[in-house]
Image (cartoon, rainbow, N blue to C red; front, side):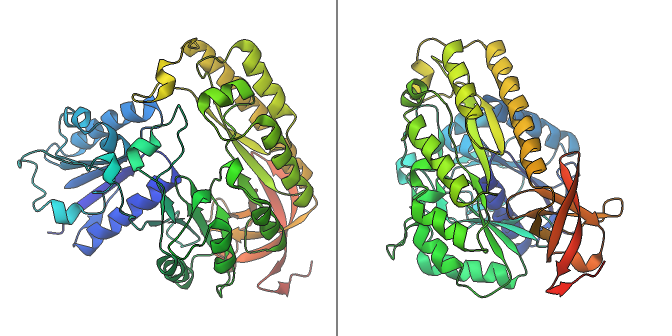
Length: 440
């Protein structure tokens, strides 16, 4: 009887792409993939350590797996596994803990998926994290969107972040590997490739290419596709990259640029590499060069020392920026970070209050951004599902679109006129598909 494996991912898009690679290894070794809520022989959890909640969730998920199958073999990998393997081993039912270097060596390290075997930890020290494990994942079975890991690790020393401890120094995919893997993704039928990494803008390969250089090479590859950049640090978003995106339809007009705080005092405590003045000029430059660009911003509330006055600075600073949405994070203390020892901690209830304030601002800005796009036409990549007679997709500038379902639109681009907003989705009408005009 064929053995089964169920996989679950916590955290970032990079983790999702790596989980997909792990899943493919199981398939190659004769396993079939089942849903995490089904009875499986093996459960793999790819963990995260960015917030305290991710670690609590890890414990809950192990319990959930054991309810499905008390005899299951349970593997925990990912950032939490790299940082605190002994802590994970104390969770009842865990059989193997795999670190960052080991997550793609499951079948090399584990000979027998029998939960009666001895529990083991395979974790290399952080300073030895040098492997670059290839990772590609798809968001849906119709091969519309693929997440492609081109960089791993981080050399930055932000005072709140454990990721450099969990993933090691910055390292990038070799030039030849990147081009050949990217070409394979296109040939497999994917139409949107999201470039991911811990610090993707820090990409530097063996041929001397930086992130801008590699973008120029990718857009020259033959095929009907577009590239989306997952997230990029403000100090690494060069004018060259901005002008390349402005001049090239194959790169999405979508920027996700972490800010973290609108207070220079807090940015300094966070050990970020820019000031609010620099960030303000960058965002406005993007909007001047690419007026319809979608700009998403990461921000952390409740960092130690963030007084009411400094939080208001952040709120007012964000209000002055032409952004489209926010990802709001509530600060949580992470072991082995500088920030954990900083004075003037913000109460948990106050952190939550500030989070809600910024989420409200985000919702308001998203509605304004969507409204500003009504009446315009955009190229949309459609997905596969028929949901109540509708098919959905995204524009280059990350607007969710729905039109009447037509099977010929699946995993294809079409020109759409944006007409009405309902529930954070814009409905529209098809003007052109596959270069044929639609006559109304």
